[in-house]
Length: 219
Image 1 (cartoon, one colour):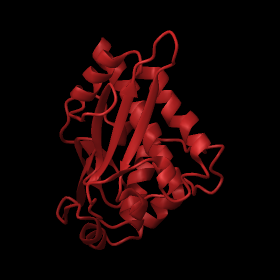
Image 2: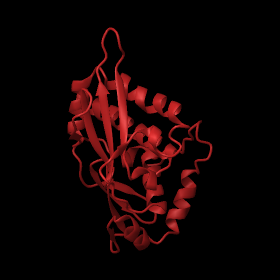
Image 3: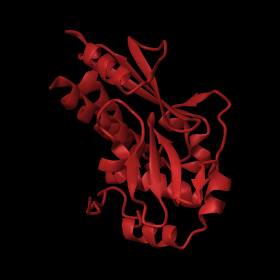
Image 4: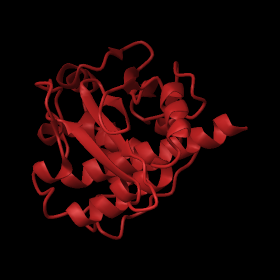
């Protein structure tokens, strides 16, 4: 499967996918494994990576991806280029950091207050208007994905993006007087490894996956 890089209009600093691939090809896979905690098999040259509840094999050095688990029928690390960019950047630049168990709003993260308006339109409002008044559909999708229900708002689920990096999606139903609303929270280890734009991309990837799973499970 081939991918064509798409640039976000509000993120002129994002390096192209081809540049990340060049860095990845020249990296040391065992150093990556030791730093991130993802197992690496020398014989098969595969990393084993858990992403949004699905286990994947990611081959070194060509970053060919194949899923080995997951039952929802849609596999974002195979289908969404932004998901691939998130993961390859994590492999190249980050280390495994454990959360304290606390969660942050986007505003509370570094530079989050600067990009809050974009995040609200790109993620919060999109989530609210997609599923605020379709909460049974939201529940069905998140359960298909193996997400964890949590007690916030009218309905909420927690998704593990990568091991120990968790995102909470919270919805409130609208009525005749008020529109539906939403909140997205990030485990407090996100700022150690992801920039504000990465966290907005995380919202994009999650919501895009919800919509893809909705289409599949509605058939």
